[in-house]
Image 1 (cartoon, rainbow, N blue to C red):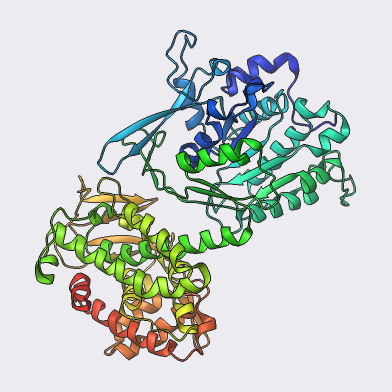
Image 2 (cartoon, rainbow, N blue to C red; image 1 turned 90 degrees about the horizontal axis):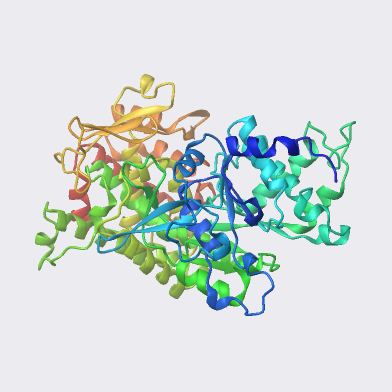
Length: 614
């Protein structure tokens, strides 16, 4: 077996592992998760580890491999490892088996973690998931212990879950990508397959699945892995020769031929149980497409891909297997346009109106008999107003734009599912949190709808104009142009003068933190936001927030905002619609945004403007 340079001696294994990792029975591990985020723990791991006795064949030789068992290794820090270690049952054989998915052979697993799910009636159910192992890549010693367990697993590792976010996937030089290559190497040269016949070893298949919505995430990870294999300065045997030239060795060929980096889409809103320090996921009910995995060549392990298993995983966990890449492309686009698009269309308006949580969108208990009654300043009236706007935006803009490419029935089905989730009366998200990075979201989530409408010669109506106008209003800073951003690119915005509404989730303190170093204060009518979007006006490049503030200080007419708003809509880091600039109705759309933005900046209540539009 080739040397990896990462092993610990057999003599020190037991004391070393007990100190740096929690894994009561490494012989059960057949899956590794790099990352311990809430989505990975609440969707991927339960689906992988689900055991259903009805799908087990009576004469199966080894039912222990009927479902996967994950070693969960966080990328940094020790919080999850310490959490799991604190939950260890000192008498596992005497304790009640609380997880129906745990077989008799699993009884050595003496710890588990909890997941809370908030039903539509407000009932919170708690599920406990067996934890077969927990570790960390956070320190040199913890990483060595984790890799040692992986290397010495007696069962072949069949799947790696990668719970790494967009930042972690941004470059092959990021530590989490280097850690992934180390894990892959330990699997290939590990005990489970290294002693097999060379032909069997080379045929061993492995799936890698990411749980973050980075476009083409599987392709991105594969690209990073191959780059590391080629350029890795450690020059391990079988990867790169000492002179730095590429050596297409056995391990690298195995990665190319037998490791599948699946593209995927994830979609379940998760928060955390209050007071749990982020350790207990607090989730909405499982949506119809919580995890969509592309498997064009049928390379997923049978624990996910068999007909019986895939049906159960779809019904219980919202796991969808796509054997056609076009189907996943449609899933992703509809999520961006429908779910994310309507979220973005609503978030800025709600935040600016001091409606701090989307739970305020829950359906009213009574229906008002007239529009005047429906749109009063009560919680019920505002929910009706906002959802009527959302419905109108979908049916008159998103649906006509998406129907030809993705089908009207499928597009509507996605909205029906999303609308139910969006109006969950007991589970919502901070509207300020959703409004983060809204300059880019305008281009990613709203831009495709505008583009398709313009290309088809269809009307871009007031609902879309309102969405972009409120987005730009949210990004308009209070302070003078010369000092609107601090060193962290943070700005200060102002709320509509509508009083301290705070429907749902009433803040206990005047200052409420909604993201790292950012907060809002309903009493003072101010909020923090960040925006790094740059725009080109004439021959000059500037930050969008600087241009917006400068325009608000000097503009007297809506047309005087045109240069700035046009530049935002064309910017690749903003509206991203440069290819629409010459389309016949694009100029009309820009003018309409200028007019409505001018109203919002002048002090007109955004909610009153929305009432007038309806």
